[in-house]
Length: 141
Image 1 (cartoon, rainbow, N blue to C red):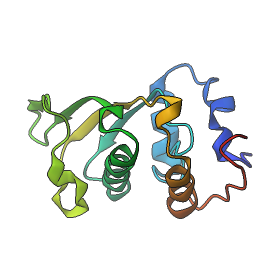
Image 2 (spheres, rainbow, N blue to C red):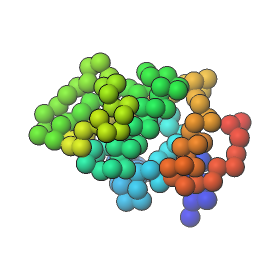
Image 3 (cartoon, one colour):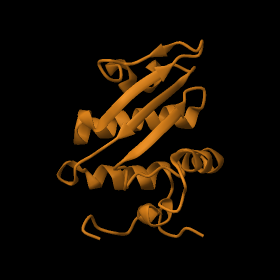
Image 4 (tube, rainbow, N blue to C red):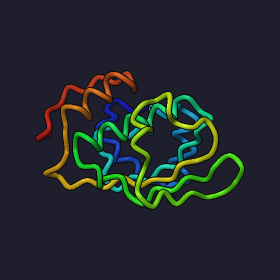
């Protein structure tokens, strides 16, 4: 039983690879099992036909805007027809609006953030709002 999702790094290291984490995230729900507090070094494969995963993508874009846009790294989009868009210039700015995110394909991204760029207040708010977890810790904890 997980009582404090903000300490996700303690158990996530037990997974053999990122694919196992993605399967668990898909099973429990993307937003419920999203690593809001400890996003550093996270990799995502977001299925755009899934409402939860489009929401997560939109929220990641908003978080990166508050932390540092370059935190979103190596983006690429496999469109619904199977063609790849390498997103050479990053994620489209229009995707900051949920309704502008396509509903087909898969977006692959990595999120890397330096400790001094973290916005704990926004991360904690996202955890409590979208994952419905109580986070009664401070940034220093």
